[in-house]
Length: 245
Ligand code: F6R
Image (cartoon, rainbow, N blue to C red; front, side):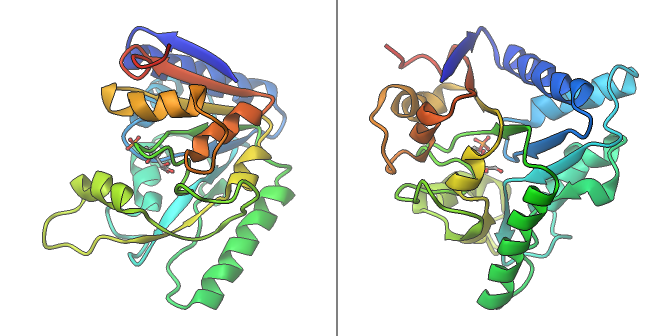
């Protein structure tokens, strides 16, 4: 696990954009693993800026997102498909058919399980993920792999923990349905990425970052599993790193 501490969240976004650009420019068929949430927005803004400046092209790139809510349609403004379309895909030259977000609109379990299996197969058929971008939940989750998730887990249905529902409340209005279920890549899926880059910014993440980096390897802090990945980089701003010894 390589730890990089940079002064500001902007520096974190620039560092992450450099890593993405490196994969995009050096791999024949780059496969990116992408995340949603507040943390990577600055990264996506930087990638869009580089595309607009003709410094980066995503033609030929394939992407797989970590997760999607169950219980709201793709067209819902809080779906992760809508998030990615808005913050990145519609602003760059990636082929829409090359962008993958777990399909989680089905309402019956069998269909969702089928969708999860198909997602795993699609990642495999694309040749695996070259660089997986991650954020970290305040409870140490990666993707929607909540505490106690198996380190061997694959893409599957997951119930969101109370702290995750609470943390994501800010995106839904009071009278709006907020999903408590998601389809998420598993920890085993994430660990198969050839390289992983976890971004964390802000004081709110400092405790989770400490547990991930200095705590024991434990399913109570799913991100601690990255201690075992050969090519995992944790890039932090000073606030997120503030509890590290
Ligand atoms: C998002 C995801 C989550 C987030 C995490 C942090 O696709 O899988 O693990 O990365 O909840 O979210 P933010 O960045 O909003 O604090």
